[in-house]
Amino acid sequence: MNDFTSRLIDVLLEWIPIIFGFGVLVAFAVWFIRGIGRHQRERQRRIARSALAAQMKHFAYAKIMESILPMARAAKYEDPLSQALEAARLGVVTGGGTQMGEEDTIAWVGIDLALADLDGAVQFARQRLRELGAPAGSVLEYRVGEQQMSVEIV
Image 1 (tube, rainbow, N blue to C red):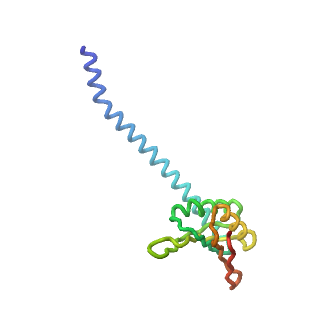
Image 2 (cartoon, one colour):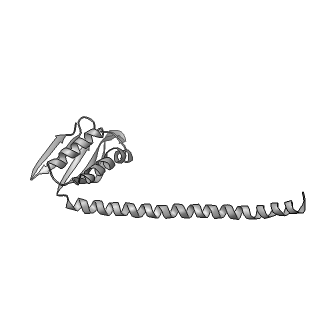
Image 3 (tube, helix red, strand yellow):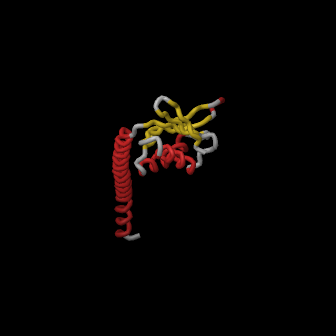
């Protein structure tokens, strides 16, 4: 090898780790900044959802007779139902839960709803849960005055 080639290899070997480190630093900065933006958008959605929930006057509870884990419950039922209710301005999903059965099995899951009215919103939620695949035996529970009401979803 001649002197030029030897010096070029030495310079490259010196600078490659620095360039690689800089690339990793830039990638981390982009990832971090995108995460901050995503967090801010999610925070704004939560604020809007809580403001919408405050406007809703009725509470309902969907009891879904399915053994499904919490994350899967959110993906299958809560998120699509919440999006549909919010888009129609009929309500919001305010939470969810899991009823454990014997031997650490899931007996059924529940979804808390804040609804605008007991006519259109209940029927809308019932229809949407049916479309999302709620199994037989699932019910939507709510109150009319002091009377507890329960309608089958399927």
